[in-house]
Amino acid sequence: MRDSKQRLRSLDRIDPPDVWHRATRLEPIGDVPPTPQPTWQRRVAAGTVAFAVFAGAIALAMGAFGRNDDPPLVAAPSSDAAVITLEASEQEPRAVLELDGAETEGDGSSFCWTSANVGTCVDVAAVTYRAADFVAIPAGTSVTVEGDARTVDLSTARWIGGEVAGEPTPIPDPPAMPSEPGRYVLTVAATWPQGDRSFTFPVEIEAAGPSATPEPSIPADAPIVVTTPTPGDEITSPVTIAGTADVFEATVHVEILDAVNNTIAETFATATCGSGCRGDFSVEVPYEVDTPQQGLIRVFEESAMDGSRQHVVQIAVTLTPGAGDPVAEAVEGAWTDADGTELPDGTGSGAPLQINVLEGPAHCGWTSATFMHLAWPLGTVSERGDDWRQYIRDPHGLFTRSFDVPFGSDGRFPDDAEPTGMRRGEFQLWIAPGDADESVYVVQGDPTAGAWERWPRADRPMLCD
Image (cartoon, rainbow, N blue to C red; front, side, top):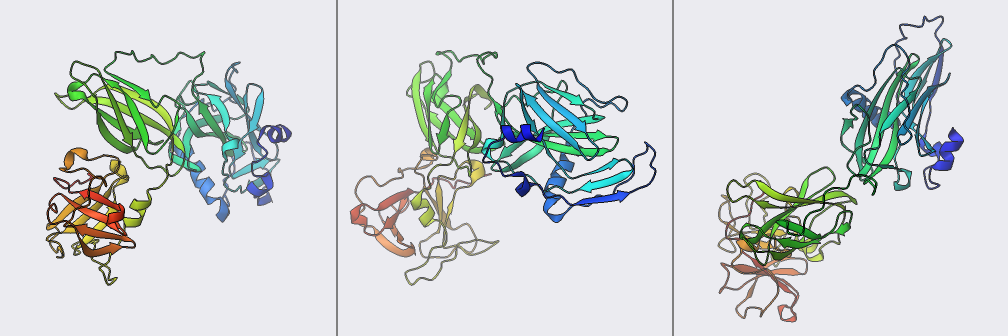
C-alpha cells in the first residue's frame, strides 16, 4: 500500500521522513478482556499539538455517519464513487482513498492502539500540503466506506493560503464530496475496538464536467447579463466587470466575495441606458487578497421598493492578488512638518489630530482608496474629534458620487497652490485657497512636472460600518 502511495503522490511532496515524527511507547498491560477498552493517557509532543487539536475539533463538530456499534462498517462500493477503505493491523490503522483505480493513503493523526495485550501510543507531527498533493475529484462525487472500522465520521474544511480555513462541515448522508469547487481537507475519523484515529486527504473539488446537468444559461435579454469575466476565469485586481443591463435608473450593484464568503469589494456601475432600455456597463473593481483562492462576483439590481436584491448574477472565479499601488503605499502612515517633527494623527481614544492618512477598510471593500483626515482650519489641532475634513484618494472611482470635483491629475495645477509644510517622504500636501473647500493636492517633487494628484473632499465623511 505504501508503494502505491509513493507512486501516486507528486515527486515534489515532502518526503515522509520530514513530515512524520513518531515517538512510540510500548507497555505490557497484562490480560485485558475484549471490552471495555483500556483508558489511555495520550502523550502528544509539542510539535504535534496543532494537528491533534485540529483533529479533535473536527471529530466533535462532525455529525454521525454510518454509526453502528455491532458489525464492522462496510458500504457497498459504487463504480463512480470515491471509496475510502479503513483497515486495522496489529500496529496501527490505515486509510486509503481510491478513485478511478488510483489510490492515495491518508495522513493519520496521533493515536493509541491496543493489540495482543500491548498498548502503543504514537505521536505524529502536523502535515502541510502543497498544490501538487491535492487529489482532483469531481464536485458531488459520492463517497462509500469499506473496511473494518466500527464507526466513521466524515467532514470537509476549506484549505486556503496553506491552512484550514473556517469550521469543518460534516458530510451528510448519503455521503458525497462538496458541490462547490475549491481545495478542501477531507477528514475521516474512525474507531476500532483497539483504538481510534483520524485521517486527512487533500482533495481539489473540480466543477462538474459536460456530462453533469449544466446550470441554466442566462438569456441575452435578461435584466442583467455579465460578459466579463466569465465563469472559471482567473482574475487579478483590479478586475473589469462588464455587461449589459436593463434595470431601474440604469444602476447595477457589484460585489466580490472571497473563499470564505467575506465581501472584499463592493461598488456600482451605471449602464448607458436603463428603465426600459438596454445599455452597456463597465466598472473596474479593486480588491485585496493575500493568496490565490476561489471567489465569487455577484451583480444585481436593488429594488426601488424595499432595497432587496433582484436579477442576481453570480460568476465563480479564481481571485489572485494584484500589484501594489506605490503611491498609496508611500503616503499612508505618519506625516511630519517641514522640520521632520511627527504630527499628531489622532490614533487612540481622544488623541489630538492634525493629519491622518490611512488605507480604506478591507471589510467594506475600500482598500483601493486612501483617506486623509485633516484638522480644520488648516494648521490647527483637533482636540474634540469633530473639527476635521476628509479628503479621499479614489483611483478606482468607489466614491465618485460623493465628490464635487474628480480625483486625478488632469488639467492645470492651480496657480495659487501653496505647500502646507506637511510631508511624508517625497510627498507634500499643498492647498489652493481658491478650491480648498473642494480638494487638496498631494505633490511628489515638482508639481510643474506633473507629479501631483487632486484628492477631492467628501461631501460627507465616508465611514465604514
